[in-house]
Image 1 (cartoon, rainbow, N blue to C red):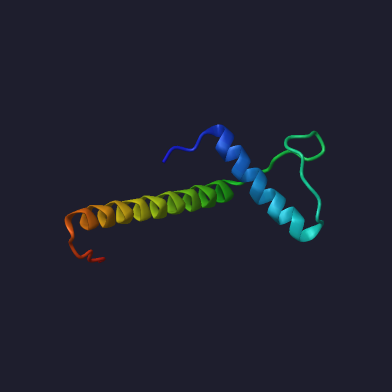
Image 2: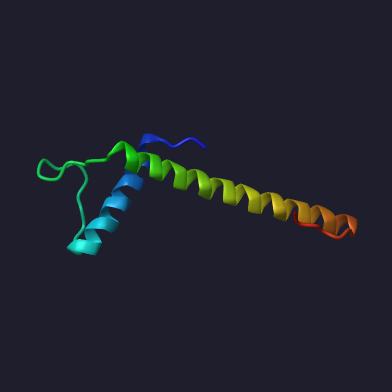
Length: 81
């Protein structure tokens, strides 16, 4: 899965907003002089891993739906491994 710069920026903002909400309950504006975006490599890696896991889960579910529909069309029993 490819993450665009726009998606990455949105993900980082969401994570920062979550952290900020827990401490002060206010919204962060992106890239202001007073509050620049500080994203550590660890944070970016974690976000990428979460997105990959989400993508793989969606892919697995869509494959299961496809197999189920195909089996139903053939009147077969679906076995999940």
